[in-house]
Image 1 (cartoon, rainbow, N blue to C red):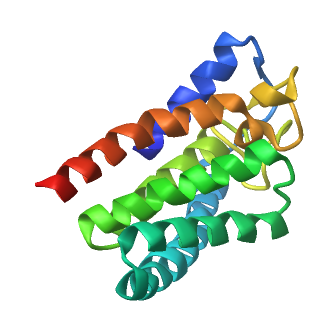
Image 2 (cartoon, rainbow, N blue to C red):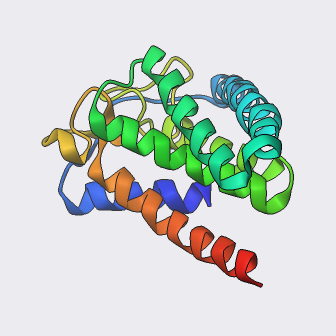
Length: 186
């Protein structure tokens, strides 16, 4: 799900004509270190939000409320990390809902960790889209930069502040929501 979502978001930006090649390069060792850093960061977020907080809230108010509340808190946390635009916050909220649904459907945190890791690692270490422009301290396999309209990723917040990301998140979320609704009605 994480790989599909990020691929869809990049495709929307490419269709809009914003994706072009940068000058970054990487070797295997920094990328492995970067993957470890991304994994630790993702595991920390998922253990806290979906592994601990979501089940606690779900016991008190039910799974839908827990997913919603935890998703809002997940997005709010990212304000501290520099997410500033309204589109970024909407995308973070949708991402929180995605990871929350995965946790609720599977009854654990392996699926949200895997999806979250695949999303972040692919964006940062494979395509070099975070930060935008340029690549992070661990480099990336490809260095793609986004330029042009901010709504398609051309801002400093990059793909995370793009409508393409919003559409990609909706593409992966809607089937999960339909499946969750079908399961609840059965």
